[in-house]
Length: 315
Image 1 (cartoon, helix red, strand yellow):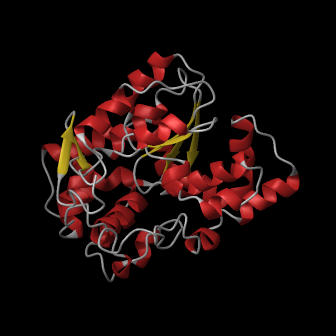
Image 2: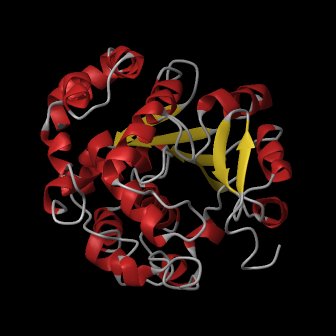
């Protein structure tokens, strides 16, 4: 596919929108019928939830803290997105263990994971949805392969409705985390990664059955800090043409912290919506002209054990 192709194309697949610059019907179908193998490592997440960070962590763990690969090979090559058009060719030559990334919800990829009978290790990364929506909004403004997000209020509405690209955050998180009893799945939150990076690396290395020496853990921590990644061309997307990702409108790695929504009041109108508790969002939305059945859907979807826990601890 030409490098600049299909920037204005949106693919609809099983009712979910995907950017056509990165996805085709064929590549999405390839993911759904993909044959997983023993020792495959899958990083699954909703966009803007810490995916790039986890790619870096897993790369460093697999290399026992040696930063060479993470500083010489782009993250989309060493941990490619399964559903994107270029991945099929990469998979044919991948050296085990394969590190595979996906933004697909469980409702689409679950059959392939379960049906393969392979001993796949899945790391699911989630993030506070208030930070996700702000980060995703900014990403839409700089990524030329995504539609204009328009106003933040409109984008927030579509995000809560699940009509943005990659679908519903609620369905994505619940779809994967509800399967932890049936899958070999480790659930890590962005907030946990931020508050305890060393503990996170030890937890992930243990899950992957790749024990590290203390100096190797320290090297993993050093080379997966926000500052280190922000200046690493192999992971900060500055290798991508500005005609595709215009980082003059904002860097791919913006802030790297919790509650970044509080620092964007000047360029995101109605950010005060996001200062409200998640469990009060339906009431807040009504105050901003978003009412009716939509609010009932939002309230119903956050009525779950995991989201209640998230709201209590991170929001």
